[in-house]
Length: 401
Image (tube, rainbow, N blue to C red; front, side):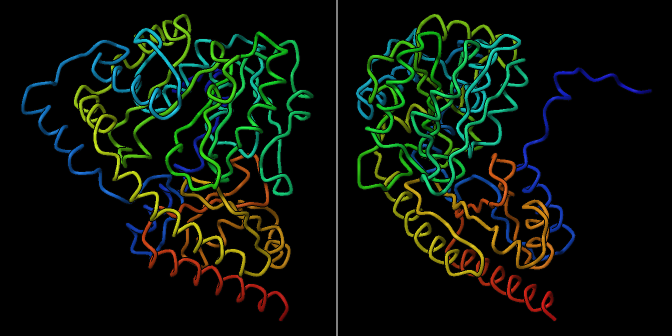
């Protein structure tokens, strides 16, 4: 029997980051020596007080359905976080908790977009943004910013991309995959453009807010552009900052009307996030934040090591990041030296010849690049860079011979 799949699902492709992770796991299971630098997941354990809160929730029987949009105690913790960290004020009716920030982003697209509506997505972008827009029957509009402009789009680029059909824009700062972060002044300049187009909603994905080390303090989009508060969705979550990826808790603050619409979408799809995870997230947000600083220090050290190592490789260049746990390297020179046609083939070459799994840049809207996650120990990173160096040198010798 042939199953007739929907046109909607045929528009999208599997996540390349998950595909790389699965491929690396399969090769490891076959006994191959593989270093996986594909997954966007902290290597730290969830801090003990947060984990204990989850265990306590189970023991106390907090294992039943909650309100679709999250418990009041977690909403209050989120409201306090936004006020403390971002100088933003929300009420409970402006907060929705989802099963990860990915679901939050999908809910936004599903609640806002109709066929033909456009969503501006600065590139390089997180791999899921365009496909979420497609699943919501919208049209993704990519605006590319290369390394020469720090992987950040300009107000002129934004203005040129806006049409009468533009209804949504994603902003991701600090950025997955590049680690680039917009300054307050840069966000304000983008805000000045968007202020002239009152029908556009801004989805500001700030999931890496606290994995950040730039000299200038982090700025939330709505914090930098208070005049756009009513049109901004401020997205965050617990996965990255508290090493809680498997707990699946994301959230956002937005207008009451949009939050209510997102709640309708969520109520007919997943319903509430895990009650146990919500209790743990409440403790995470309200508790001692010193664990955040400790993990951030480790990520900064790894960033400095990896970026320096990548820039020492032949045909590879990598910009300094302001945050996240990714390095995004331009590998066009190495590809030319090896006679490799594209970044997908280059990633395959590194997997086979070096035993190192990376994600091709084309999945992020940036061909000729590769993303490496440094959410792993320093010894693993050192080994990975040495393997890549040998593979590049060996390939160059073989090609010239």
